[in-house]
Image (cartoon, rainbow, N blue to C red; front, side):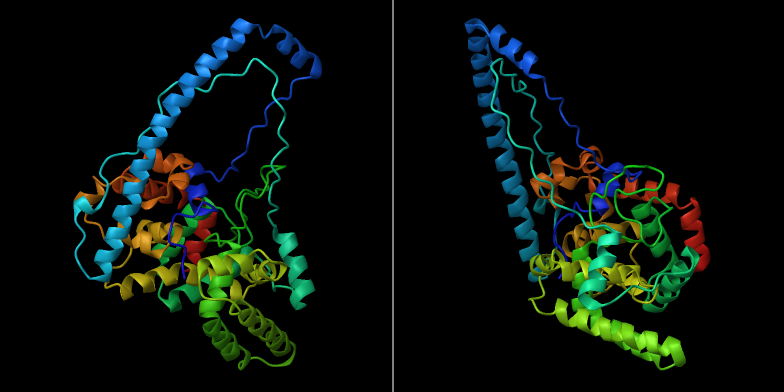
Length: 398
């Protein structure tokens, strides 16, 4: 079951930052004790009274804005529920089924700085994000498995191209989505936020590979498509002998155990996410690095969207940018945009497809604030990045 709303783990971070640079938080300088003491001494009764007056103005303005914004985002949610109900009844969706105004923007006074010293809050604990080395470690510990890595990057690209074409993806879809997700240069083990050209860079999500799969994607795909992967590898094993056959049989045994593990919970994104945050879930994610299973995972990350669209009666081939919208936002939300006529795309704000928090953290969706503009900027980045070496190499592999 695909995540129904915009995911921020990788794809839209890529969209928001384009170059793939990590979203770095700026750490405020901590004033030395002597400076703090001086500020406390300088806080006159007049300064404190002025601060409290300005704080009251700020809080009143902010409360008024929150009331307005709350009503707006409630209407977004209600319209979304209404569209979903119409689709279940196979009714057509009209322009007035969307909120057609842009979200309110706070324009009141800024929060004033307190002239009196305040108690320092402990820094927020950052949730650890596993990197490739962590995935390999837990795969060995939990499943006694080491992914078979390609001898060269082009070997992985060729394996992906063969499987993707056989499964029904087009060269244009695969190459342009790769260009968008990786910036046109990514390797099979590229992780969101990490770059060899940026020493000290830090992973910003678990998204890895050509189509930037999260740990939850890998768990969900094995749960839902694992039987197909087992069938494919079993057929390949039948053509081998000697050491290669033994290695494939061992990989099959591990794959069967992983598939069984992913099916120990209900088929929902939230349940799969819980599994994905365990050591065994991290181990499952290591399969995205394997030369045999990795291309299957990469392919089905996109293919499930194509199949979903067909199942909903949308038989026109998806453009790469349309497929990317479904890849990033989840199939249901993405199809909402994809099936929209061009005239409506020009008028419908992107906010209709977000939760408030996701929208306010996404400068690209805010700046390119209609469906038409969002698809256009996605195509623009695909055009630009398709000329880069990695994208050209993948295109040649097809």
